Image (tube, rainbow, N blue to C red; front, side):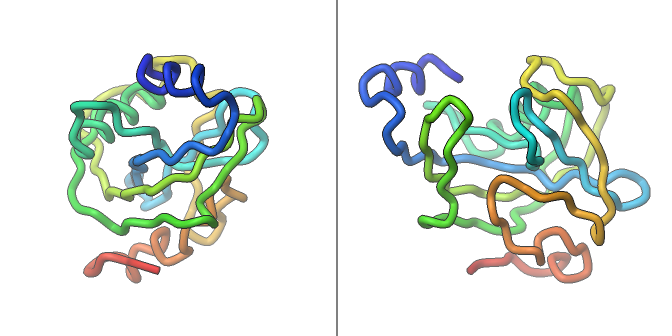
Length: 155
């Protein structure tokens, strides 16, 4: 958590916090999608995180993916933008958030699949038809390459 969000949390405690964020759909050579499981969590998610003050969404997704996976990526396009009360989540420490999330399709430029910041406990690729239970109820279409290939998905 950045100093900015720590400062806000110190003021509001675990109460609901609205957070602009980004997430990445990263596929391997078999078109499987990369998911992470964070320490202390039992469910999976995409490489993702909050947009920091002064940071563009594309800068944010590059930073977050590197920190969580060790991969250097290139954001190719926006798959979708999602928000609303169904994007609320409560972390194991009791902190409540509501995300507005921009999902990027990304390609891998370089790097080794290995967490840099220690936030991710497990990194794993899943086939489209085997997506694990995820923390945020993202639309299933974003994971199906042929459905999300030529359009941006909105709810």
